[in-house]
Length: 163
Image (tube, helix red, strand yellow):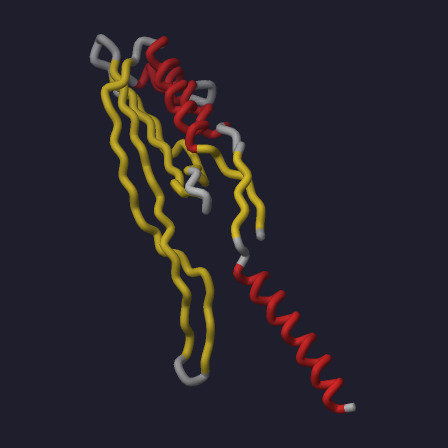
């Protein structure tokens, strides 16, 4: 098993709600949001056979992009987007991986630094903690360990049979 840390879905939701609250404090209220999910196939392994040539093992990597929109009473707008991979543990507990702020824009250039700049509230998205431990089966390590154990037993049995 490989162990690594991810962000709880509730921690992610709390961070988004915190940004919304802080935006309201600056006079920008939520006007909506939308979600898009895309599939990026990734190569997980390659093989070669002199009979069939090269082969590749592929996997789906679903990436979600959420965009949140805000406006003030003067009609100025601001929106920001985050990307992440939504997953769940074998126990069904949801979490997110690879969370990052991927875009921020304002309709009024004078608002950009305050709402999207380095010290803005949306930048806290990049600092959301990885507060959940996840363990996943490492197929490669498991296969190698199983093969190694089988090989050792085969050698032992062969050496006993030769005597």
